[in-house]
Image (cartoon, rainbow, N blue to C red):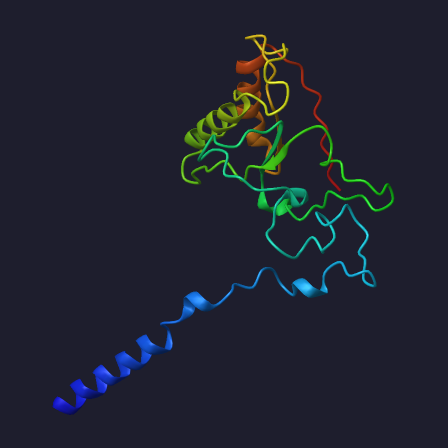
Length: 192
């Protein structure tokens, strides 16, 4: 018993001493930082936002900055993408046009998904409507004081919803109608 106690104490002391000087280490920033953007290895794109493959790194729509918009309203935006993870591998940089449409006047964010239950359809529809409306009724990052077309005469941010089935259309239309009043819809749907 005494031998086990001494052995345990020695092992514990060795572990503490081996890990005691981590403050002297400097963290590594990024994967293979020295390989990126050398003069002999320039990558076409918009200066780094889209330079790597769309399947590497964190999956956000168009490689946009991610912010959990429904969890916090600390970040303002002009255009927010919400929706399915399935369409998040889309890139923003257009090679033939040598342009990124997300680098323009607007502050654009990927706000993630609206969390919904998969056990109660009626409640899920309510969650989609409330989540969408919570984002839609915020002040935008740009032109927050400008007059707009909403019921209250204010400019509202744009919300782009991607993915999902046709069930999500009803709560999204209810949310937009609550903000703007009666609207018209042109629905494009394509199946191969």
